[in-house]
Amino acid sequence: MKNAFIACYLAGGIIGVVPLAYMSLPHPVQEPQATNTGAASEWATVSHADYTVSDFRLQSVNGLSLYDDKITVERMLGEPNQINQDEWLTELETYEYPNMDIVFRDGIMDEIKVSGSASTIWIDDEEIPVSIEALVDALGEPDYKAEDGIVYERRENVLKLFINYDTGTLESIAYYQISSV
Image (cartoon, rainbow, N blue to C red; front, side, top):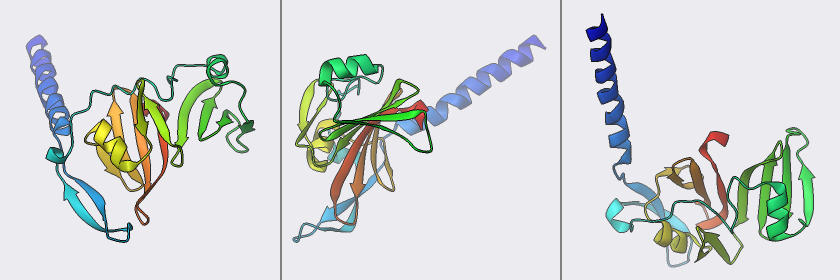
């Protein structure tokens, strides 16, 4: 019985590793290609060779980590312009700053949202212009593409670029932990 358990454990470990190894391989991403008018109208497959490898660990955005509390946020950014309580999800509270909202869930930071109209964003203490091209150049190949943008994951942290594919514009950037999805 003990040998059967060990054999099953080892087989499960090997089988469990294969999907992870496959997931870490680069996969092609569909991206809109701009036309002469600047609007995105055609889709092209972009391979991993079109991206650089990123050293970003996604530990902070605009000087804040997802482990900061309200006191730390106010100490770093000052009083928010406005504080909003969600009408339906009363545990959510949003601190509004120029070009950035910080969402707390039950007093714990849940998400940082940076407006697509911001001029720059600081990711891991490096300043990057807020544009799709500049962010992809800096961050490298996205981990996956969603219907509303592209996503970068580093351990438990996620940075998602929300893109309006009809206009080819960056609407916002969200920084959150994968467990909050």
